[in-house]
Amino acid sequence: MTFRPIRAGSGARTGFVLAMLGAFALPGMVAVKSAAAGITVTLVAPATVTIGSQFDVLLVVSPAGSAFNAFEAIVGYDPDVLTFLPLTPLSQQEGALMTAACANRFHVFKAGADRDTITDALLCNQVSLTGPGTIYRLRFQAPPDPDTTVVQLLPGLRFYDAGIAVTPVTSGNATVVIRSSVDVPGGSTFPALRLRASPNPARGATNVWIETPASGHQVLEVRDLAGRTVRRIAEGWHAAGTRQLHWDGRDLHGAPSPPGIYVLQLRAGDDVVNARFALLR
Image 1 (cartoon, rainbow, N blue to C red):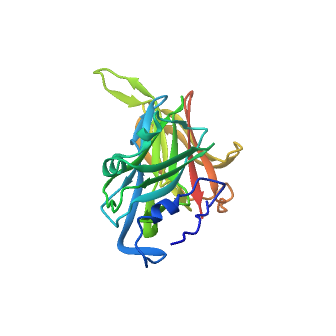
Image 2 (cartoon, one colour):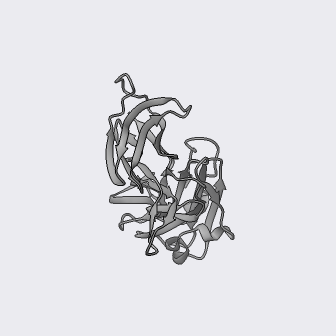
Image 3 (cartoon, rainbow, N blue to C red):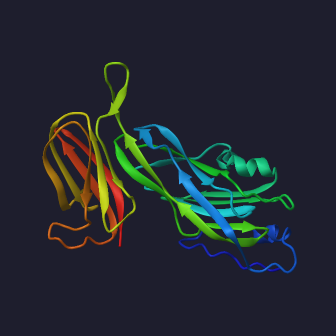
């Protein structure tokens, strides 16, 4: 059986050694294998991360779905916010669902400037998985300043069973909120400033969630990556606590803002916190 090479969607990357997997395919298999259940895979990260700390982002298959014995994924992130930390040995990055199923695996990992490419396949004859469980993990270090960022699955996510593509595949991204904490009486903590957009990425509009520890004058703006003000969402005196605002995706003149990466900036007294988010159309 002859397998066509997998094209990398963006940039050169390592593909599957499908000839190896083809050894476990049965004669007469069709080119694409579909199942009603399909596969649902999601990036899972802690809800909040302390500035400067290390944390793991997990690639999780849940719930149980179609059988697979190999996958290929590209995980993208903002290198201005997160620093990727490779694990040693590299096999520590493989998830428990993969390592427990088969001792003989084909594993290739390539770290890039803003994305990591993963190939992982079970080479045990007639061994496949259905989930749920963790199939991979990546470790990052948070920045020294509060921020909000997204770790996402980029185009090129594929699952295989005995060399045959499994469809459909549904994926989900992870939003990471990086915060600083200050001690308060009684030993509890609360964020100095906390800011995030939800949903992120946003399609046309988004909600802005703010948490502040003290009352005072606050200014909330949307800016582009060049630092120009796109829209001032709110300005005035606000009490300490949590509040939610809405941005309709329009600029100062009421025109729809073009798709791209934007920065929420909250100025509260002498403190400033930024959070990036993506706007889609």
